Image (cartoon, rainbow, N blue to C red):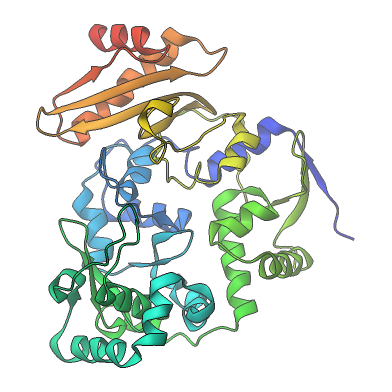
Length: 403
């Protein structure tokens, strides 16, 4: 029987942060393709989200870990080099191209895995779906907006797709199409995989579903460092049965180490190769969709930080704000700020700033002010302006003024 390792909660927290790329200092020189490739290989998943009140979310994890970097270099990894490809992983995500074979089982199971209007249009209008695929095969890449179809009248629905968009998304889900680029307006451009993805990736034989899921769990374990079954499953949104079977096989093979973490109610699994740093000296603002914080129960378990996204909460009922980023300092989440890039005025607006209980507010505010200035410069904004909301705003305002 495999021995169970017992970990103090603080060590588990440092292991998790190191696995996510926060144990290393930011590069002292300009960040380029090599550093971004290494980071995307480490994280495996950059979640995509359309909200642009601050920045497109997939740009933020690299800034959080590497500091200012040229966003066109990250774009080139997906749009030109195609070392990253777009697919449904945690949610809509950019992933290293090497993972494409390990998600083909999901593509093949589109009728069970996809949802709503995607599967409906295939059932009701298969000839239309086939005709769209033929059109792209003959005429080249296509955007949904080029179809000029009328949207259904479903006010308030975030999936208010017309039939053409639903058909393209179905073909995208099945792998018959992939995304060759995103437009400036963040619209997906569809094309055939053989015209987009690296030939050596497409040539990889399709693994069986158990083999593929095992590789996805293995990848999640490396990205998380130490994790519960739910954490491992959530990274690629796997079913409980699939994940449990894969975890058992990886434990049997010695690729996962059973562990108990002090204060965790559930058993954990440790990547045997995970770094165990004695300290973490990070300073980072985290996107709500960053892989360090996207699973809210894990955030609460590791950091004692209760975090909820309030975008869809009516304004009058929001506690912390609309687009709230946790602030990591050392190995703790010490504050949260509601941020908005006011591009017209050229400023980064702090709509609210809240500290966590028991922190040194002036110290936190000083570090946060430095990070906000760094972010504003990276985004081409000339100043940081703080609104009078939240218990941290007076200290933050003073720290920014002192700077």
